[in-house]
Image (cartoon, rainbow, N blue to C red; front, side):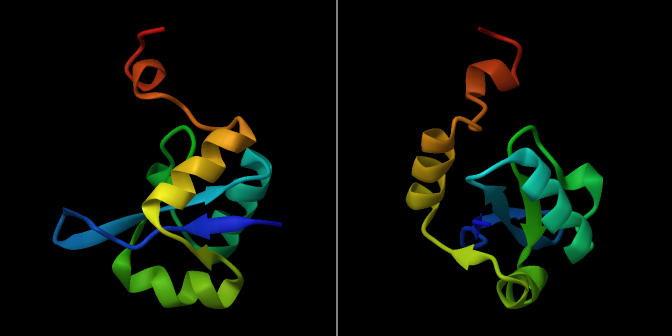
Length: 91
């Protein structure tokens, strides 16, 4: 099981957000997010957004903190990365 988070850097809705991904499978990602209490509405095709307030909980649950660059590299290598073009309906 490899669930990764990057440092929360993206401000929105009165907090700062990071990304939660799996470099194994979406099933693993969804199960981890459910167990952590991350709402389904936080899912965006290949990752969940998580608020800075949840970072320590996610680490305690077993997520590994990596740089944003490393997170994207590992997500691409897994084949789970959804490109910006695909995210916006462009092939």
